[in-house]
Image 1 (cartoon, rainbow, N blue to C red):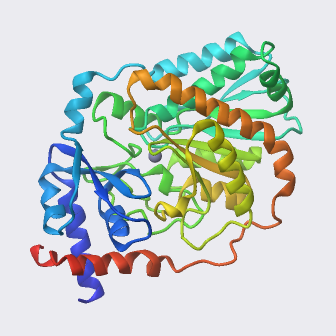
Image 2 (image 1 turned 90 degrees about the vertical axis):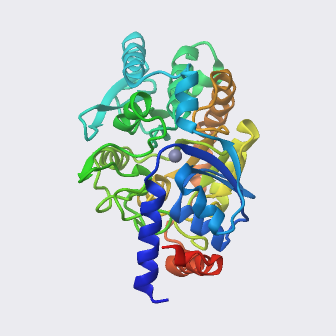
Length: 415
Ligand SMILES: [Zn+2]
């Protein structure tokens, strides 16, 4: 079939996948680097990625697509939305509560904190960054770290953990020897909520919302902020259709939220960064946009991801090994700022039960303390370029195999 026809099929498929009512979370057994994995990633809302399976959110009206393609799946949660609202998830602070907590932290500890608004969301909410360091109003020549949370609206635990890290540092300063040493010897910045509009929307309107909330056109809202960064912004693991959950925006850095992080990172020149997401229990490192694109610092990044894994028990992995995705924060931070950047996928659900929040927070706070500590020595060993030696052709590595799969599945005729 001609290229154009395939594209038409894929658009139809996305349309079908995106309308419907109740949504189920299902598990599909699928090996890494297979056409089926690429096809699922490109056409469904992927919730969790594992070596041997993917967990995807599927509108119930679209389960037929899987069945017709001969793909067997196991339902993990049926009607995710009503289950979540039914148990009225507790233990997570709202945007307003987070802001109040940040303000209190800064007010009560002015000797080691500085609170700054680094930008505003599309709906005008402030994006806060809190600096934790001695002499917080002076830009000292110390190793620096950027700890970010909540690019994706529904990943509530990804706001709570960085916030608790900030609180842990402040509350243990002068009491715990290691914490005191790090606050004195590092510049640590925490941005607990990169996507405040999405967070508020997820908490009040539709729990499973992923993107930002800027009005794009017609009834389409939001951009996937973790596909909107400016290095290798493109077409793999992301979509150019505004209705998609992984819509990459009209152009790189089109969104006020990613612009805020871009300008902030360019100003601060971070030595290392961690961006929290959920879920999957993974410590991911760049590059994420293509299988064969290895960072010149690949060994160092791997070593640090493995080092953090000793504390949080996550699986360390090159980001593209899950599935390649273009335009994420790690690739840009590494390539354009030479920041040793990591994405930590927390827990086993977007919004883990309240009973799990403490444990997830504690082990990841330990991982962060370790990273921020060793970065001083490890950063001396960085490469003199961030340019990968080899790229694979993203289209060759991604689009064609899934087309092939669709053909094999023989349900193209359905559309
Ligand atoms: Zn995420």
